[in-house]
Image 1 (cartoon, rainbow, N blue to C red):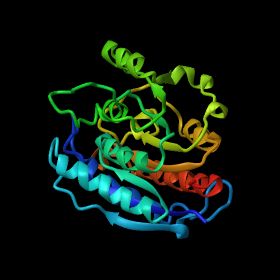
Image 2 (image 1 turned 60 degrees about the vertical axis):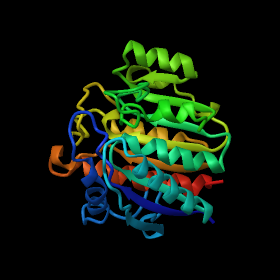
Image 3 (image 1 turned 90 degrees about the vertical axis):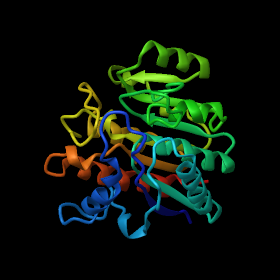
Image 4 (image 1 turned 135 degrees about the horizontal axis):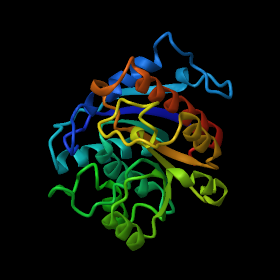
Length: 269
């Protein structure tokens, strides 16, 4: 039976605009265990008692730190070797590259589904190869996946489009979400959700507000459509200092539950 661990990764030193995402894991946990909701997914499975929360990883939280990146990779690899699926809570999106380095050691035919306002494909953003604007460029260079499907993108620069063409990335804009065919996905899937992929009207607690994003329901429908096996996931870029009445924390907690339910349903492989 698949078991799921939750790991907080409070690394936000690679953010390019505002800091504060290092406080995200604790805030999402608080929302998850608040009296506002319950333990069950929308399909009626009480997943919260099945989650093994490892707390937050100890990091230096330094910009462009290869030590922090290696610590993240080693922590994820340890859990995968033990047979667990890992849902990571960021932190900014820089955490995803070192996570994928570990996941790729166990799955050489990985598909990544990435929800975001931004493609995060910059070759070198502001002189930082580990920037939160670059994780998928690094992961693709390292061959961490066979296929990358990006959903909700609405800020792609020409450089990002060039990078997408270079690596064969499938970039689906927020207005074109109906074009996403989950049935075309094959093999193990890793899901990465940047909360700014949602519209700031429903998820204001992010550092980069980009109007015109996805609804919570649309993201939940994406999760529900993934065929699996889903072998891991992350929810990143939650900045509590920007939130309103904890509404984005509750969105993060909701996504955590539904992702966990889907992992348990599809099996982590």
